[in-house]
Length: 387
Image (cartoon, rainbow, N blue to C red; front, side, top):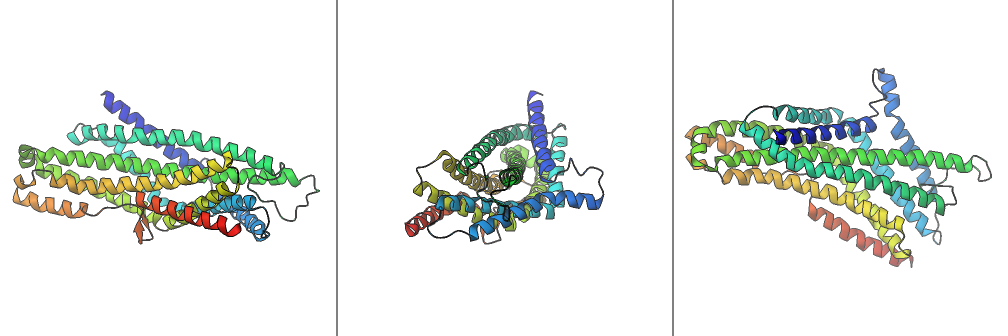
């Protein structure tokens, strides 16, 4: 009973954080009972700010000349990469809104399933409790870390630009002598930075919670399969176990395929912008006496890439673990018809699945290492070229 209660609490927290991410990414708290045109206008707020912000950044980048302030230029490139990535994320999430709704329903179904009395339900309670504990801790600690770093970067950037800019650019055609020069720049960039933070935090935490639920479900499936290691259980209950495994594993694969579809193109943009962040922050670390702000940007860029790589690796390992678990059972004690079902489930489980980069490669821990090595190499080359 205590385990069921703790698992329900973790699932409720996951649902709470998931809904919070949706509320802020899709501005759902503003769109209740609105007309289609009003909803479109509300959903246009974020991209409009980001497009204008990116346009101003491009103008500022185009003004840069060799011999200028490379520190500001490097920071500006990092913020431009963040703006570009956020725009991609936002439009992709809007495009695949229906698929994301299915994922929300998936969590609702899990909450319902743990209330039943069965072996699979008991296993779910145990496995979800262990899996979600880690992901909820990640979400809570991530909120604190990102919020504190954003505040610190705000203060640092405002100070080094003489209370003019937060994102290292100024609004064109607004004269420096104007009384509105500083307040307009600061207010516009403050709003833009908050939008960037909302999309980054919301999308990353949404991803973490969904991976946590998939992790818990795949753990539960593996543990349920392993009950067939007992020859008696395999002989008497094998048919029912395989049927439940097939249904639940198929449901997980469908959700995982939706997640892979969402990140199909987004993963490529994510890797490119992560490379850009790390390359320029490594350059900053070489040309400056390493400031706290530079360390924070480098840490955040590296941590986000590591998070995606690590969680994709978790999915790869868990999907592969289903096939290994099937081989460890007493499958040879199954009836002939049940062996056919076993082979069908095994064939479905044999292929690893993780986040794909446009079908070219799969994100894993090795991806993190390769991008980090490339960023260090190009960051060093940039430093050598400029000096």
